[in-house]
Image (cartoon, rainbow, N blue to C red; front, side):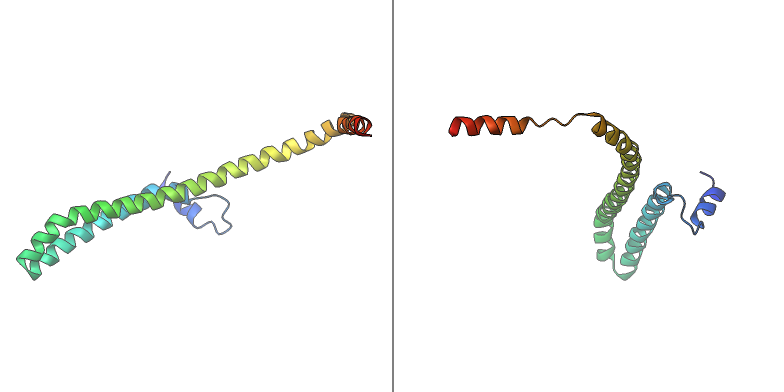
Length: 128
C-alpha cells in the first residue's frame, strides 16, 4: 500500500473501506519503537538519579519492554480478529441472502408431509 493511497483512504469521511487492518503493522512498529525509547529513557533517567536505580532499570527494563510488547501485540491481534469476524459475517450475510430465495422455491415445490399426524392417530387407536 502506498502512503498516498493510505492517506486517501484515511481521510475518506464516508468510510467506504476498512483501513484499520492495513494500518495495524504500522501501529505495531510505532508502538514497539515508542516502548523501546521509553525503556531506554527510563534507564538513562534512572542512571542520572542514582547508580543503583540505573542498574535496577538496566536489569528490569528489558523485561518491562517485553511485557509491554506482549500486551500491545495481544491487543492488536484482538482488533485484527474482530475485523476478520466482520469480514466473515459480511460474506455469510451475502451468501444467506442468495440462499433465502432458493429455499422459498424449494418449500413451495415440496408437498406437505405430515407423518406425525399418522403416528399420533395410530397411538390413539392402540390406546383407545
